[in-house]
Length: 399
Ligand code: AMP
Ligand code: MG
Image 1 (cartoon, rainbow, N blue to C red):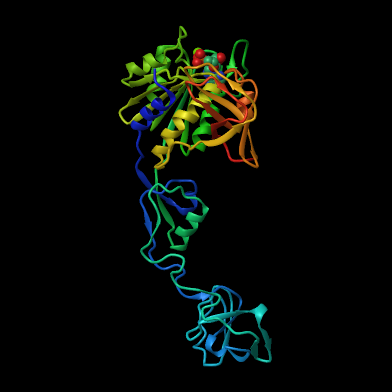
Image 2 (cartoon, protein in one colour; image 1 turned 180 degrees about the vertical axis):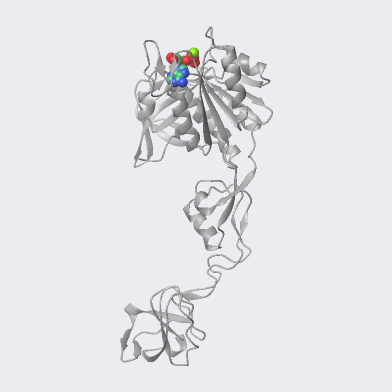
């Protein structure tokens, strides 16, 4: 049986970024840039004022000076004429520096009266000027392939006049829940039936990982229905199923996947929860068979499916980097499996502090809903003392 790390490696070995597409810049937030971006020109494109004030020649202001105002320059307005020696131009932030001037005196440091401005103190050459190209030089590499388009990066692209961005395609992720006990959300669950919550939980997780979920609904625990719905799922970029992969009498998912030509890469991993997880491939399509327990399916999604989706979206770092957190209390586990412990996280003076979110039983969804992170407790270890540092995968940002 594979360890957690081995299983994740086997998955990442089998997936690669999808093709590219061009999207409107406003639809590109959170997407991954396909290819690098070089600056088509200088930023800023011309020398301009960093302040509202007066453009002057610094040589005219070696001591106190009184300069006649020769022009007025607004941001976006037409250019003021060249400033005669000994003159000044009233200038607004962002306006091009008039020819001849080499400094700006802010309003707060000058006094305007009767068409002249008095500058009481000496002026340094270049003060309060933003020079052409000081932010970005034409031709410079500004965004690398695989960069996630966050707001400042969208800002750079917009500054370059790019209305469209090349990004990696989002993986279309088919989600199929299996089980005779399931009813669809909205239908009354009769005795012995439960609502198919996994499809909705996994769809939300797919969106967070940067994919587009396709809900295939429920397949019953019988070959015909499974065959029809699983083969529909193989038309997507990724197929994720829940339940029917344990050792139960009606756990047919793996069987039917094999009949459909899905090559089994592994079944069962040394993890808790999530032991029965299976992974296979149909050509380029990764197929994840997650256990049915809502807690197991979401945790195995986080640790196995999410990295695959991140790689498919072009991310160069598909595996989430864990943070170090100090255990606030002792924790025990059995040896032989990596345990994913649902934890609450606080930021203390010395970094993150982790405490258990409560009952860690696989049947307890409530504590996963409370958790801020998942502590990854190594396979061979058994006893963890309070004060020890452990690796934690943070689930969401601070809320
Ligand atoms: P299984 O993996 O089929 O043994 O299912 C394990 C547990 O997960 C059982 O208690 C199922 O009722 C439950 N379960 C399976 N599928 C779902 C689902 N789609 N939504 C919520 N619970 C489920
Ligand atoms: Mg079942």
